[in-house]
Image (cartoon, rainbow, N blue to C red; front, side, top):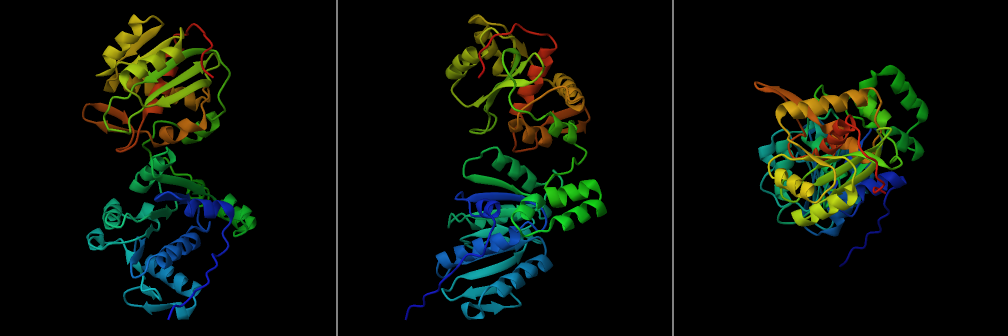
Length: 398
């Protein structure tokens, strides 16, 4: 005998639905508290469970008490005739034999071994990175999708770094941010309650919990608030200085050549980011640069590229990145950002915000966190450094 179940997805406001039900295998959602991420992901996981007979799907939370909250909410939202609950194991076995298992990430080693067809990592910023590694391994045989959700919680955690990769357009990933304002617009949160929280909480806490803005963590050389003030649409050409950061193949498929052009008001008026063989890179750089003064990364393999560019004419100068020279141009960039004396598009913001410095026994080291890129930051810093020297304008950038 076949049992037919009629299912109606609960109401989700448009941004909530688009964030969670994205077609990509990996969806990363940075969200404010009470923005609907839990309800939306419970609906998503339920639909995944009904789509596969006699399989296993997981909801993973940082600690047992949080897993139990999601377990109780799932039970409350389902007719009792559709499942059998195991209160000690925190499982719901559906009529099709699929088990929704509510797990804890407290001991990541306990997450290995199962074949999981879909998973949600709840409050991911508050769980160990090893838990993500374990959950990802369980999705290997099934090629199952995953939703990684949570409030932002500083920048020094794996979920923040993964969100930046997703936001940067990593293949197979979808990124979304849900704020309290989105939830208000979606009709699930009262504006007065958000305003009360703003008045009651420290500013940094409110911005993380309700606006999904990560705190600086004390490791970013750039003023986070000044970065936001410097965001603007592309300025008008002509360009007077261009910075080129060259891909050097450190990480196959993830290193990019980036060019950023500044006009006479120190506004970004040209931006290009691409991957191509060296011969095509040289052609593209020449076409975009024309006779504008350009400062080009000459570190390592970049040096012969600069020589080739110079042999073809134009106004190219090489810049060798060392710990001292990188510190110098990053401090110059930090200064003009703090003075709100530079303008750049939104595309550059995530790399600026995630850029870090650390003190080592040999000095200060400036770089992107492990697994992320700093190509845009370096190109912007090169352009800003060269801007000090001026340059001959030439209209080329769109």
